[in-house]
Length: 287
Image (tube, rainbow, N blue to C red; front, top):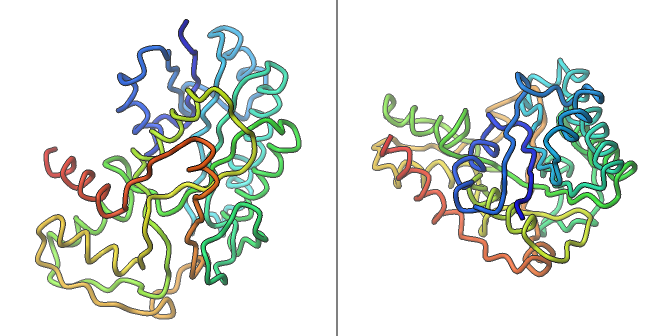
C-alpha cells in the first residue's frame, strides 16, 4: 500500500533534495508542488488537491527565505511562513493527515553559549525569524499532532546558498572576507530530506518540535575555509566581525542546535557537517 505524500515548495533546496531521493522510497507516491501548481494560501484549492490525490502526508518545504528582504517585506513573509502554514495545518487536521513542517534556528536570539534545546526560550530578532515562530505557533494551535523541525544553515546542490556562492567567488577572486563571530552548524539538505523520510516511515511518531542539523560546530569563516579546501580553490578567506558586514536582518551570533531529541525519537544517525559538505561539493563538481 503506497503512501501519498504532498511536498510543497518542491523547487526549493529541500524540495529538490526530496525529489533526488524519491526513488529510494518505492512505497511512496510523491506529489511535488510549488507556487505555480498549488497555492498553499488558498484553502479551497489545498483541500481539493488533498481530496483529489488522496494525500496522507504533507511535507511543508515551502517558505519565504529571503532573510534580508523580509525586513522591508514582512507582510509577504508572514503570509507564506505563518498564514499558509496555519491553513495547511487546518486542512491536515480536518483530514487526519501526517504533517512535517520545517522551521529555523532564527527563532532564537543567539545569546546562548550551549546548544539550543527545543524548549529553550525563543526570541527572534528578524522579521524572518518572527514569521517562522508565528508559523510554528499557528500550526500547533490548529494541528497539535504536527512534527516541526527547526534546522540551520541549509545548503545543497540546488538554488542559491552559501556553498555555491563561496565556490563561485573562489573561482574568480584571490581573497574574500567572511564573518567569523557567528557560530552554528551547516545542514546539507540531502541529510534533512532523509531525516524527514525516516519520520514518514517511522511507526510511532511523537508530535512536537525537533531540532535537526548536521553534527559539529563552526563559524561562517570556518565553513568558507573548508569549502575552499574541499573544492580545491586557491582563495584566501579573511575572518571579519559581523560589525564589518552589516545586513538589514540581525543573525543569531550562536545558533547551534541540540539534536538529542530527534536522534533518540527516530534513531537517526547524523553525519558530520564536513562529510556532507564533501558529498555536496563532489556532486556540484560533477555537474
